[in-house]
Image 1: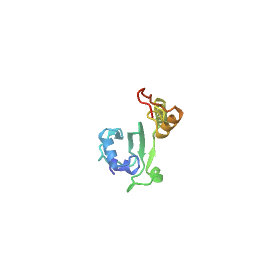
Image 2: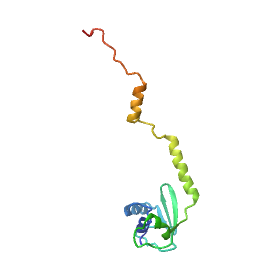
Image 3: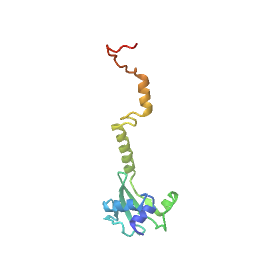
Length: 133
């Protein structure tokens, strides 16, 4: 089975086109060699690919006939990605929150109404020559 179809069947990528782009950018290797999208994959092959800012390592156990359900993925592959990689991903997510908290920036409609309710409404100064009759 082709590497692009295999990674799509294993639900690592949403479309085969996304896998093809990853292969063209040299983000996918099979047994330590950069893989083109048409590279054939066999059981016991070790696939390494970069996705979501971590390098994932999987070992092919079996080749599926077609795309499989999420619950059946573990039958066809073994995930050898170190736990430190997932911890690193969590740290990256936490560091992003540090730089910009959710809800900061432009106020939402509700925030704007709360601000308007809190602040006194601005009054326009009346000109001296125009008095109401």
